[in-house]
Image (cartoon, rainbow, N blue to C red; front, side):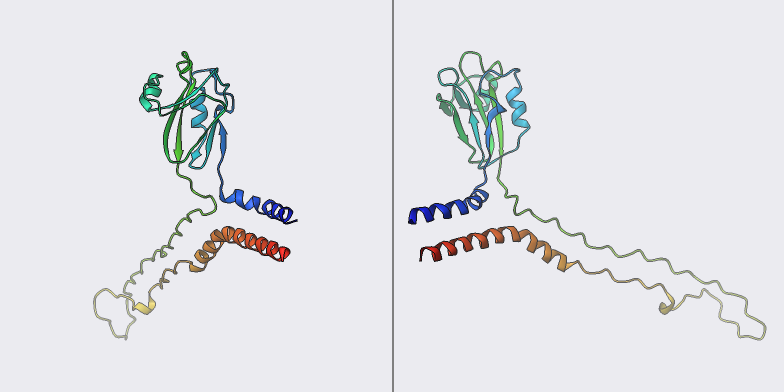
Length: 219
């Protein structure tokens, strides 16, 4: 009975475990690892994919007909295996991508490498899609102030006091009011931060509830 309950718990938690340990398995070339239809076939396939640490490459080849040699760049370009890094002769072979960099693989049987049975793979650091870095909010720019018109002196009517000669400037109370720039929307930033961190929190809460249910079930 205990084993059955443990199995049920593992089945319930499996989606969350898969989410936390994400990694993609790529079958190289989406085809068997053999002589390709044209020389740049495997490199074209590699450049059309984006590999991250945690992914893995599957080289699907028949044992005794083909092999897989990891080599330095110079050996890759010359189609030689004078300085092999890793030699795999049994297929299919799986290569885990554990760190970033550029990796080179060839088949050194006959002239298969010269015919295009080779590939270079660029691996990037893994970045979880659940925690994207939010773009900074642009600060609002103050509205442009319109120039204050300068009033020209008019001819005073007869009998009135003549104002002093010179240019008249309106007092600050008659000028155009420029509103101060508003502060950055702090509430929107808080809402965004809560939304970004919400996915991980949901997984943690659900996983904790499942564990508590399982413990109560056993008791």
